[in-house]
Length: 196
Image (cartoon, rainbow, N blue to C red; front, side):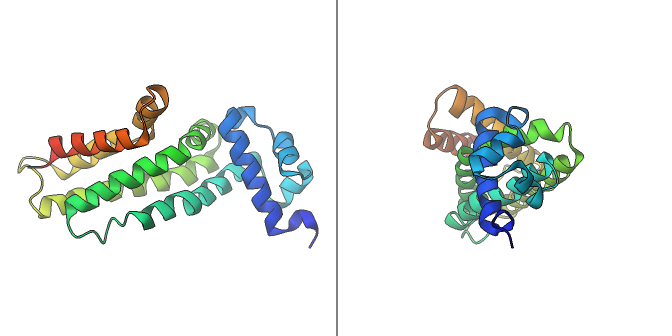
């Protein structure tokens, strides 16, 4: 295998792409710049990825493995002793992940408007996240942690909105809150609104 076809070359390309997409956005970062930063030729990129959109979708999958999975492992949600503990773990995971991925998420959102393959890779993750909120809301309901009139779908929608990357960006990035302050605020707000 040539040196440009090796797995470490793929990793170097993904690392370079992440840096440039985060710094310059999807449309600002060209493949020539990615190749230069990775120390490979532009043609080497095409040995691993069929297009810039393909590179971004591969990067999205890698970020899930490197940033999301470890956060979930640090804050176990579905093995928590109670639904309220799972709620706290969910908030901790989402805040931690948001701090790591908000820039690349901006690139994904921009790219999905123009590339169906990016939209197709992003949509299932968003759907999975929402379904996790539904699952958590059902657990909270079963344990009697929600007001009787509170609907599961409403709880999931509230979690979706409060824990969105948009809310994180508004408060942490734009208003200079710390991630810890954001996490505490979401926890307090959610518990005040949702729990009995």
